[in-house]
Amino acid sequence: MAKGMKHQGRIESGEHAGMHAYHGTTWGEKHDAVYDLEQVRQVGPFEKAATDFEDKLGAWAFQEAQPYAERLSEKVVDYLTIKYQDIGAMAATLDQKLEGLKAQLPGLGIESPGWAGAVGTDFESIKGVLTSGNLRERLIVVEQYAKKVLSNDVVHDQDGLAEIIAKAEQAGLDLEASLIQGDFGEWTTPWETGDHNRDQTVVATGDTFRAKGADLESQPIPEDQQAAVKPANTPLPADFGQPGSSVGQFEGNYQVKQGAVAGSEKSEDAMKWVDPMAAMIMNEANAWVKKQREVGMPLKGGPSGHTHKFMTVNQILGMPNTADEMRLACIGHLLPIKAHTFIEVMEGAKALGASPYPNSQLVYRNLAPYGESLAGLVGAPFPDTVLDEKELAQAGLIEAEPLNMDLVPKSQQDQVQEDSAASMKRMDGEDTDSDVVNK
Image (cartoon, rainbow, N blue to C red; front, side):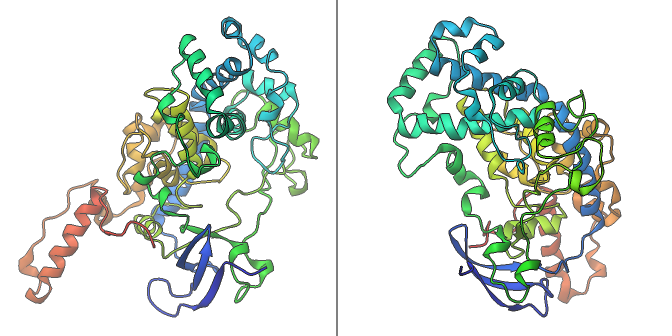
């Protein structure tokens, strides 16, 4: 099969020296790209510290956002109850509602052991997730609901949707009807397209941030050495299903059925989860990617479309003033499974009501509502603590020494002042490039 991106040659000099130039089409977008196939890019101290911090942040958020994941998944149950049962069933207990959905719940599961959070498709497992599942298990159910139920109602059954909205209003549920009623034109599903407010985020600009290894012409890197979907070799913890464990009871049970051995460190005994972004290569020529590299932010797969979609479903289900909580749930879901990094989740959420943040080394200190307390909650120092005085001043953490222009040769003063102004803009999180993404 013809590859989407054709190799143009190795880059011999400049900021991308040692990387490879490509041109072609990925994700339906024709563009130029630069891929670091041989990992020649130098990783600085801040990025290394940020990667370590994000490991701890993801684990903390996984537990911290659990109550919100419970509220969101219960809202899904309410929607299903109104759709498939009489409105009087809304007065029932959660367990009774779930028993009344015995025919529908298996459709909210996944038979895919490589998918983190999959629990299978049997009724008891899905019921268990919705009564006592962890954040990841619950968000998988929310995702499947959005793909298989909500999407069908919005795109293919507006009459039935109008009835659901009327019943929801009668039952006191606050579905955001304005987001799901009307002519959706080219949409196939609201989950997959996520068009809501996409024009306010780089998520909307076409996926030129990355490529699949399979999209690259095989030369000069042999095809068997290109990025491919690989097992994550994540051990199944011996305490799976216990409070505080990184793996829940239902996803753990499902992995045991696939051959995983709890407590074993052997790769052959690991869970069947795959690294979601092992097949992806970042486009180093993309302007958004370049900006994050300048700041030193870890990247995995580009701005998170999954986050954008979860945020959209959160709005549709009528969860007012909860954008920051939904964003934290996405951090807790996507960081531990290595699907995205912190800045990628923040970018995916920013057009849907989440609190603003600076696109600088200060970003970790500006995760609302935690702010400066986040380091203590996570149990790790902020990554900016590894910066030297000059870098701290550029990040706005200490006051920079004023420029003494008398010490600068006249021939260089204009350039020095211009560089200083650009640095101040970066401190404030402003874009210094007019073109936000690589076209």
